[in-house]
Picture 1 (tube, rainbow, N blue to C red):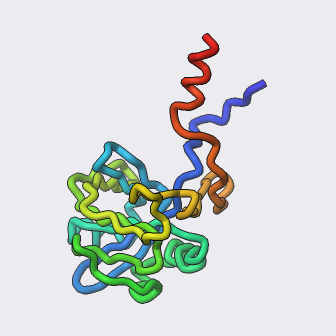
Picture 2: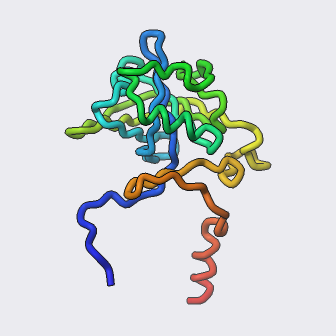
Length: 186
């Protein structure tokens, strides 16, 4: 038996990230789990219009997206609970300015620097369409081909229906393997 849950958003869990923005010489951080892939070189960062960070992103046209590790979860959660309009969050994370001109969190295992190319606005959200300009990763989270290994990276995941952080789990199998096995049975 299935139950109709109504128009509930149920595409969780998603990676917990910290978005960084700089405007007027000031850096701000915001915990964001509403990020999405819209192409191999584009992502979307969706922020409620009430956030202080939105105007900073609009002013600079740039932002960074940092993967959250368990080691930085306390700070990441804090920057999601406190508004940058009321608190100075600039020094919550040790950071530097990356090649793309965005604030890069030193302790994040993987950071994408992005240039905003569009903003798809809804009544309550700014949905920033971003081109990835640089991806910076700790060498110890890369596989032997120089690609991110998410079993090593272990990003924190967020699921909204219950407002819970989750750990990533074990690898199930390589992509296309189950389909090939299924096809062989036909």
